[in-house]
Image (cartoon, rainbow, N blue to C red):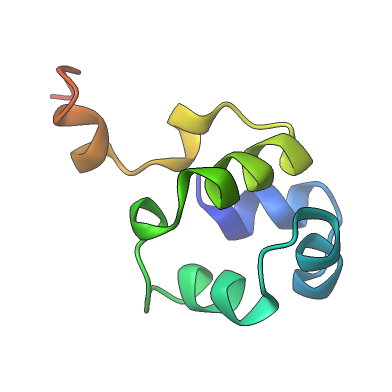
Length: 74
């Protein structure tokens, strides 16, 4: 699941999500368009997004990030 998918499923605009989480709207936009990797944000901001979207953090991390922690994604 992508950040954009989670955000739109919950009916939030980027601006609304930014206001709820304290994550700047520009950062949210950059993550959604692929300019910034979601795994490169601070843990605090990442968890704020997950909490606001009611999403398990593992679902927002791409498979290659999960693999580094020992997951088997074949």
